[in-house]
Length: 256
Image (tube, rainbow, N blue to C red; front, side, top):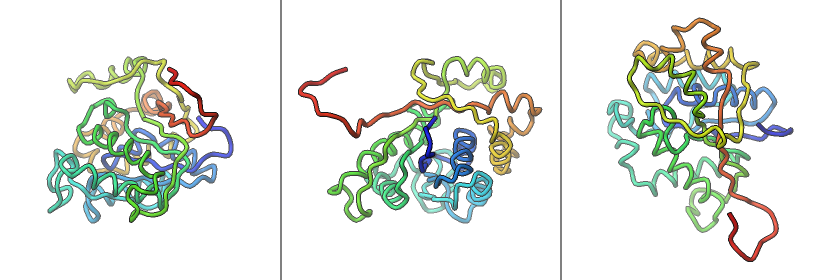
């Protein structure tokens, strides 16, 4: 995915467990190589069960302490008592919150959900994608959110996704749920990362979200599979690169 030295990495996801399912292998890979890694989670509040589980998962992945924006999950009001649903909060407020994390952590690369919100298309995933895209660009502009710290411009933004070819694999396991699966053309993939060397940590982090295992959510699917099937589903992570074109000679016309 990246040439050496391995860049610092900030992942931005909607819920506790998204980081482990979507990018657990890459987060562990970077941390193991000595890079700074961290995760911002848009929903759930400090002190909740899922926040505690997130802390354990990040410890396994080597991604530091949780960075919780603390908004409510679209489908779980008690996830953040007294707080509005993430999707209902002013986008200017949530972009400002994320810009502060970007400027404080100063990552070279950022990861978030793709525009579909991943396979499931959860509204919180979709909204996290939008907020992250805006914050990624705003963080480098000193006149935007001047109270959020000195400007910082990350070098790359990667969108965690699934190509059409991968859905043929996932479909065998998810067909029984009846859920629609969102995927992108294979030629859109900029990085297909083999994370098998870090698969044990990734699986352990997924399973650290015990309440989701017990609830029958995606971690429950992983918990119920034999090792060979876990490897089949989780050993590759796919990313679209959103390239801001930070350097180069200025031209005198628009090109495609």
